Image (cartoon, rainbow, N blue to C red; front, side, top):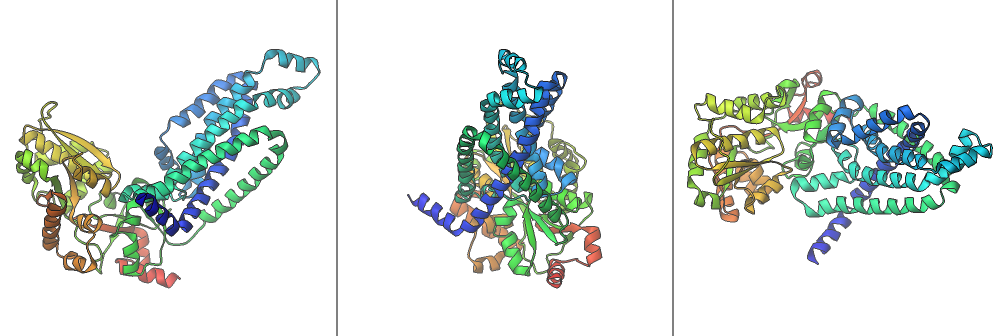
Length: 522
């Protein structure tokens, strides 16, 4: 009961944002479905009239359905930018298969004797189609439409990752910060929308002959609105920032940065990998990255100086459960071999090798350790296991691989890697609950995202890396029975990034410079 009460309190507090996301979700889904309905039914009819074309048509729409949703969005981003246009395009493509296939099957399965009777009555091919075949195929076609609707509502949640809005914003933010209320606030309306529109389509199916012309008129209006809004969006000249879900919500992220520097900035939500593509392709002007990211060099980006010291130190270190330390003390001894061995420049290079040179993560980690004089050849398949987690970005993957290589070469343990947890709280809770034994973490994240102390405490430790490390070490041991081992040697703080050419042209070197520029543009 307490959970439900807190959930409803959250809904009331966020009702305006929730209603906005529901409207965006419905708009994306309906426009995509109308387009898929017009094109899909047409392709299905063509397939029944041109039998040689049936195979290629079905093959193409089948192939589109096999493309992972996020991969398709990433492919569309450099071609169409961010926002509603690529989102609707992706939803349209995913909705085609059930409509095309069911239209083809519904018409193809009409009894040949009925067709012959229609021909005998003197009906033309068009009349046979519209007065005989399509009416008989309506149940099968509508089954495809209803399937396409459910698929579209589900896939539309991913469109939040390319700044198209919708209920995915709450879902991904909630996953990033492990906020169950936020996840449920996005997932529950999406499920209810699927049920509602499936029910509505069931009613429409019974009255389709009366409603077909009004529906086509609505579809035409929606297409005109889509084109208008797309042109308007693509032509916007506003300075635009793209941030990942976690940065939009976490305490050391956008809300605090905006107030601290007084940044009157328009923002959109983007998936981390797509965020860099969007910046490179001039779809956004500012992103939040990390100071050791290899893409700073690859994309010729400028990292703006945090001249007012908003971001605390983020020294990377292994975070290990006390249970693991007690049961497997040799693991701690092995990991301590990594104390202070990685500089910031070296971490940038390692990230660059994976992100831009496309080298394997384990290969990059092993090569670095080998150059540092470590043994890297052992890979154990049997024996007791140490489970290593990571967050969902390249650097965390590399560090987790390093931990695994060291453990397998300097202990009798086999390292099992569980990579790609979707947010800080998810991987932290997995460690606290004993589902993993260790993972790479950052001291600033430990302070602001996990501990979340009072403002007075923050001010004491925010800008002193030694005191910050000592504080999180003591607090984690006392509160969570987790142990911070010594830092690995580099500080990977948040960084606000712009394209070098644009930053130089506007004379922006610091976040304060950016604030002044934005205020002048108002």
